[in-house]
Length: 180
Image (tube, rainbow, N blue to C red; front, side, top):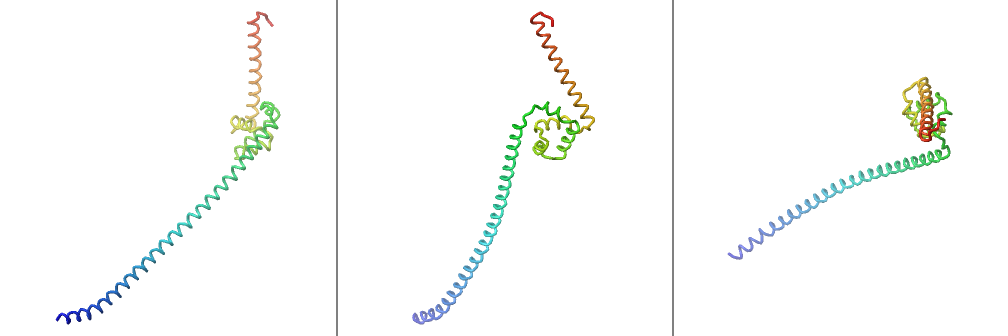
């Protein structure tokens, strides 16, 4: 009986073993192919992310290059304006006296139309600080109002000068006791 059971076990176990081995092999192959498909999907996602990162880096490099060019242009403009300021170092009052009211009005209007002040200073040969002062004093005024303001400013300067001279004479008189 023992041999019969052993033969029966061998007969049944052999095909069952082979069948189980075959099923197990198919499952392992399926798991392996599924793992490969999953890994391919992950690799594709990573590749897409790398492409996006590369594009972002290219954009950042382009922006950096543009910023570098703008900085270079700004530096050149500053150097030009500094060189211009050294060449044309004239007192603002002298410039104001040589430029007409119409020209001042025109310059102030050009500033308000978003023309760059440095370019305007180079074009008109007027220091930037003087143009900024004019903008603060005369923006929004008509030509006649600019004329009137400048005339009042000149009269005010003359009166201040006369007052300073008067105070100086008075101080000298008080100190020395001599009338002039």
